[in-house]
Length: 96
Image (cartoon, rainbow, N blue to C red; front, side, top):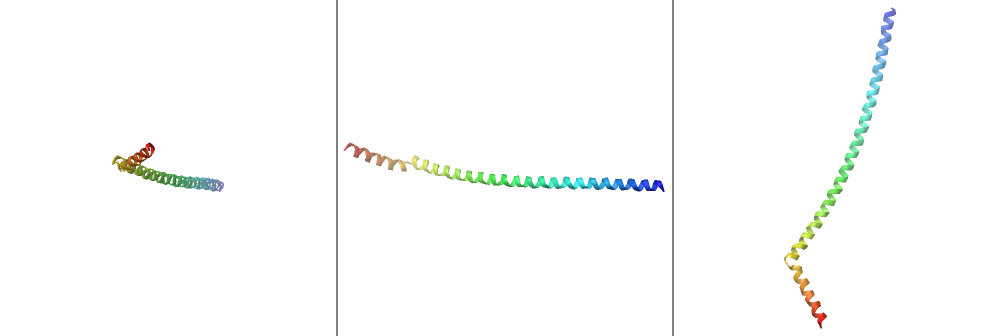
C-alpha cells in the first residue's frame, strides 16, 4: 500500500511537470506568434517603402522621357530654328 501511494505521488509529480512543460510551450508559441506578427508588420512597411520607391522611379522615368523629347527636338533643329530666328532678330534690333 505504501509503494502504491509513492507511485501515485510520482505520477502526480510527472503530471505536474508535464503541465509546466505544456505551459512553457504555450508561452513559446505565443511569443513566436508575436514575433511573426511584428515580422508581418515590418514586411508591410517594407512593401510600402518599395511602393514609394517605385513611384519615385516612375516620375524619374517621366522626367527622363521629357528630357529625351527635348533632346530630340533640339537635335532635329525644331527648337534651334526658332532660337536662331529670335537670336537674329535680337542681333538685328541691337545693331540698329
